[in-house]
Length: 527
Image (cartoon, rainbow, N blue to C red; front, side, top):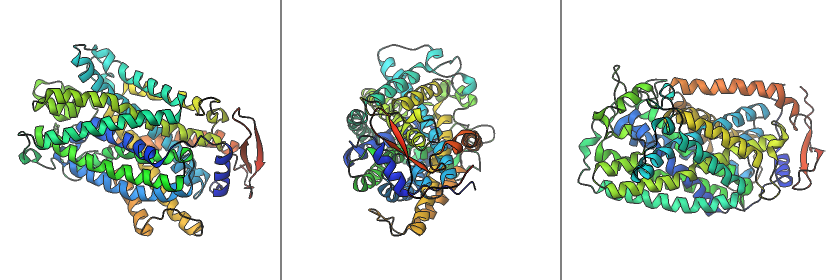
């Protein structure tokens, strides 16, 4: 039977204890990790993308995405406190609805995190080229600073070299160590929050701020149409990408001290803190310079990341448009006369966005790590460096893939594709919480979702709604990627699965010498 392999929770926890990563993170570091990923992607990078989809209705988009994330965060908090190991939604699915669905979730998460990291690398490149190099009077040639027009880049573009380089540098930092990475992240979060607080204060009190600039509030309507990716709900589907930070917190559960207490604090705390900034920054940006999208012949906003939008943004009349800026927050302040502060915001983004890339690559490598530890991927991917105690092999592989994608694709297309995997994973976590409530009601729960039979279904409905408001190409990417994953599963993973073979992996030392022991209740199913 294809759905008969469900890994006992006790076996998952025992395996993690025997082949574990170093527990070095507290609740404060976890919260900062979540903030480091959430505050950055949506504000510094995607503000212009969201405005092109929804116009001033971007504020509604943030609210919709935030509501879905809040109910999802409660589901994550309960199950992460119960299963404090690496793997996030993948591990939760393995312990509840079985190996097959767990594989599909893990495969989607691999795509989600890697593409998201690429998207933020592209966003960082915009600030680096515009504010940092531009401020020094240095201008990279177009062919070195953007992807090709055919892929949604710019005319004359070939490779986004800064995006490629930053992805590789962050990868090197993650190889060195988790604790060291968390300390760097804490400094970057402080810079980021300070910069955004200054942005809100300057824009909301500016003489340029006017409520008239919020008119028309919903130029593409609340729903732009299924598969269009526009309108307030379409923009919400894109902005959902920015909230993946709290999911990354759950992937760090195995490296957390007292995870039953600290993981729920990190998950919910980082999400609530960040949501306030999303709404305030969007209000400040739109209220000062406006946020109306560039419309096409069909009277709908042009598709973000499309060659046609790139051509329109190159025209002089759109030079000051929010929707065309590659460094939107710095651009807003420069347009309203705060050039010095604009450069400071750009510099803050330049310094802080690597923390987002760091958390995303961190999350992706931990998914790879635990899937390998379960035998579903080659064992070499779960090797831990004898000195740094990090999964160095898979970190290097991930970093190179992220860098290549960042070098050639624009931020808008990457964000939408990543979201398809994000929404699927969040949906499956809600399902896992409900299944565990039925199958294992007596297991201690250090955090319980209040009104779980309302909250979890709302999470499922919200994820489905946002998924079908992604652009059609992004929706189709997930099943296409899923078909490739099924081939890998049936050609390799199912026959190599430790659970399917009735064994659990025990590691004797950090050099990787290991023995195989039967699980307490071996699964006798065969291929």
